[in-house]
Amino acid sequence: MATTKGYTTEELGRLNNFAVEPKMYVDNSVQAGFTEYAEKLNGRLAMIGFISLLALEAFTGHGIVGFLTSL
Image (cartoon, rainbow, N blue to C red):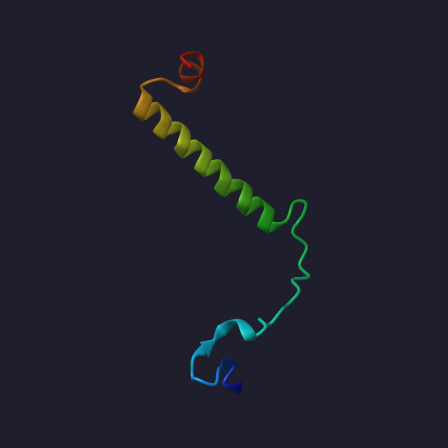
C-alpha cells in the first residue's frame, strides 16, 4: 500500500479512505449552566417549538388543547 497526501491506495491504485485516522481534538469550553451557548440553544429550541405550534394550528384548525382532546 502506498501512502500519499493523507490517503492510501492499494496495489491496483484503488483509493482506500478508511485507512486514514481522523485528527481528534478536545473542546475544553464549558457548555453547561447559563452560558452563551446554552442561551442560544434554548432560544432556538423555543423558536422551533413556537413555529411548530403555529403550523399545527394552521393545518388542523385547532390549538394544542383542541388537537389533544380530539385524539
